[in-house]
Image (cartoon, rainbow, N blue to C red; front, top):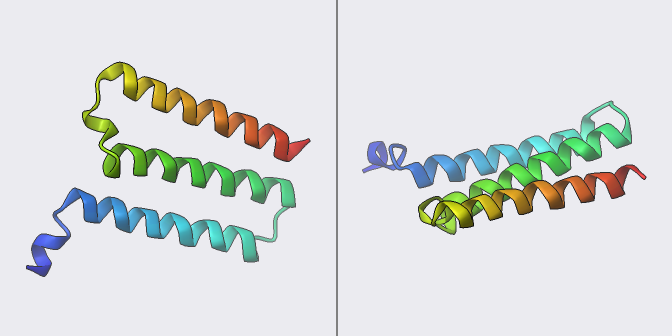
Length: 88
């Protein structure tokens, strides 16, 4: 059973989300970079995670193409707006 666990796409996506969470924590805590750069990287990681959650756990990948495109466009627009507000 454990060998089948890692062949499951859901488990792989979940593992990737955990790794992305740890990456954003590392960037936020011990990055040694500027605040603006770290903030933008953390926001980008967060929106990549939003896309994976939507596609794999909310079944957007099985939705009609138009709905999936609207979802992806929403992610890009909101991410751009938040990053823009963060940098101002």
